[in-house]
Length: 69
Image 1 (cartoon, one colour):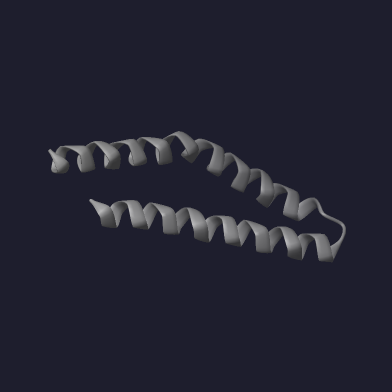
Image 2 (tube, rainbow, N blue to C red):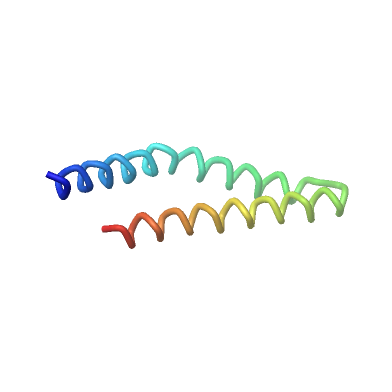
């Protein structure tokens, strides 16, 4: 019934998060490398802010999916 449907949806969510994990890690790593090569301090600050926001959202998403279990 409803419990099985919820379990299936949760598994789908977990699978979806896992499929994006490598892309997230790659993007984060590339962003970190790019940070050290930027000549403009303004660009570096903006990129750091965007990376921090991305990391916060990623960790929040993972925490929410774990809390649903």
